[in-house]
Image (cartoon, rainbow, N blue to C red; front, side):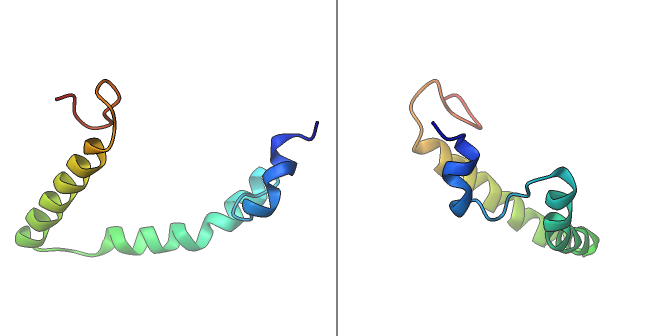
Length: 74
């Protein structure tokens, strides 16, 4: 039986084979995240973002069974 990594390798091109390769592959995203964190937003934009995140969390949890919610346990 083949190891899982070799079975799924064609579908996991985003994964590096070594830690160093993975770090190198992550660099473009890390640069983008750094730029996004440096952007200043207004209080109103922050409130809108907060409401969108709250809505996303509720939506995600609505598809999960009771006892397996990610963000709430209603």
